[in-house]
Length: 115
Length: 113
Image (tube, rainbow over all chains, first blue to last red; front, side, top):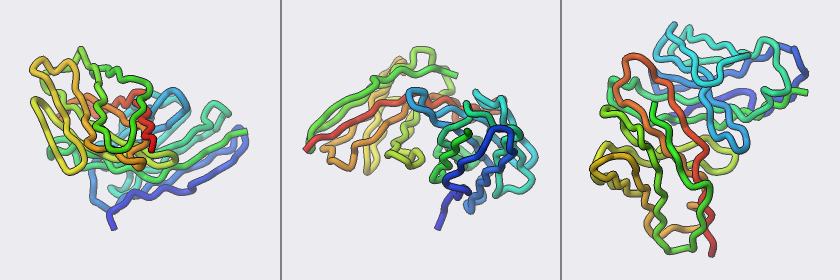
């Protein structure tokens, strides 16, 4: 089954404790992206990757890191989480834009709480 | 990237047609219009994409006037299961400089029995 998986689905952590949220897709997609969703603010893009070893900042990259060492994986790293990073996070993937696709497939989401 | 404006919320009843309009006055020549649907606690799901005139699939229709400064997502005969948030996105289909995407706040559609 074609899908995007995220782990963990729920996480409660404390300020300053480094964490990683994993994202994996099995569709051989070039493009992957991370979003956060907060009430009243919709979905905001954090980082995106157009292919292996190619990443770039979205609208709200501060406090986050990403890496794309393999095509299928795109982990989101919070080196020193703070309470303002409490949010619902979504990973998404799609074919590269130059192959004519704008359809993104989203993961189930990771609800992160930083206390 | 073109900014979009949508109504915050809309109400409808089962069986009615629902039209959600998105305003994108600064749309660029190479921008496409894409709509997503999101249910609570789930990731958004692609509904439809278009460039001009009308596009129809098994779920919805997308109407885009000649000036392309707005677009309308049309959901025929909605049911309770269509209660969701609908997002309009505008961006280039072919992008060599950036693949940044802006979702906006979406329109919350509530369908009543």
